[in-house]
Image (cartoon, rainbow, N blue to C red; front, side, top):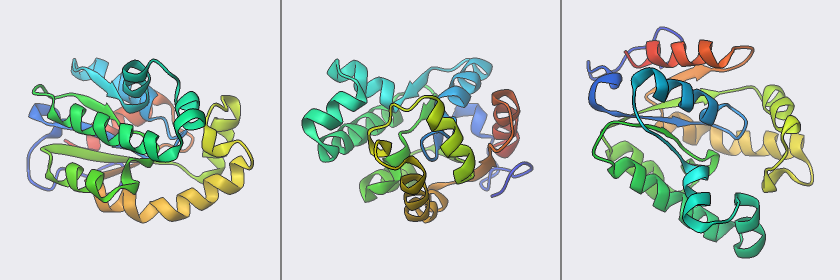
Length: 184
């Protein structure tokens, strides 16, 4: 589905009794939109990166440096499964790489959740991550890495998405409203 007038394909409103999962590249605004959406819906927010940091007592950067990407991806999967297993409907801001693992894509498909891809152009992503560069994958070449990652992940985001919302040149409030329209 495409932004902004898409509707749920099964006739159910995702804001009634389902988790809403936000997926997309780093810098797409999953955490910011997730906070606004959770507040508006009166639901808890599960943010993958925050959950990982709480669970381990270390930052994402520290985990990558000490344990490597594989260990981090395992933690991503564990936190996604924990969030999807929560009994009350929530908003889940999934880590950008969550779609890389087949097990995660399968979990998203099997969950009673509505998955929204927050899509941003690479130029917007580059601008956003330069403002707060704390992303270990982007240390050497942020723009080149984001372009490569986008090309590799675009089809995977499409695979899991029930709805798609563009974030380019929109405020958090505008994107949140679009997400609500998308899954209504």
